Image (cartoon, rainbow, N blue to C red; front, side, top):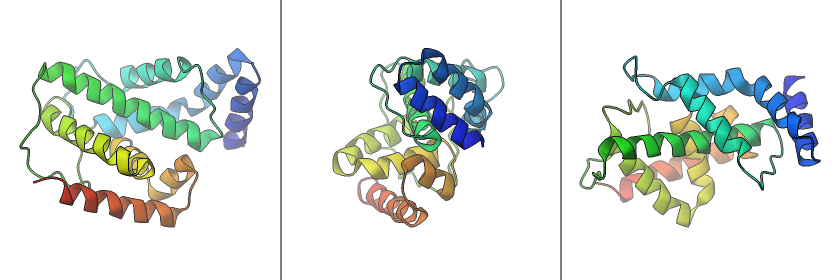
Amino acid sequence: MERADVTQLLEAHRAGDEQALDRAFEIVYAELRRLASWQLRGNPPGQTLNTTSLVNEAYIKLVGQTQADWENRGHFLGVACRAMRQIIVDYARRRLAGKRGAGQARIPLDHVQVAIEDHAESLLAVDEILTKLAEVNARVVGVVECRYFAGLTEQETAEAMGTSVATVQRDWKKAKAWLSENTG
């Protein structure tokens, strides 16, 4: 029932109910914390960007969207994944204060857990590659955001992207192949 509740609240928000988005966010808050926690795993305690601050900053980005038209819970989580990616990349940029990750070694998408403090340059390199890939295939980038940046399963990614698990699997393979061809 929770999924339907979120979808109904998002529909109410589109119809003008300003409080509906807050209620939807309350329902998915635990899920967003899980996503943020997965992404920040490996960061030492006491960092400025922690699970709570990442979720709160994502919320601010989400509610600040004037043209938001979320279709359902999965779409909302997908947009939240993208917001988290943007926040993490911005955080890494600030940490590097202008340094770029040019010349970095190939970065495989499997089994990578980014500790922002230790791998800011690699994170920026991944972001640059994804920005280039978005020009070719934005859907593949969405799959990478869900899988790599938020740690969603194939099923969760399919729900967030509004597509099938088979499409997610194909897009994941495309992303890895594209990354392999365009790095190192």
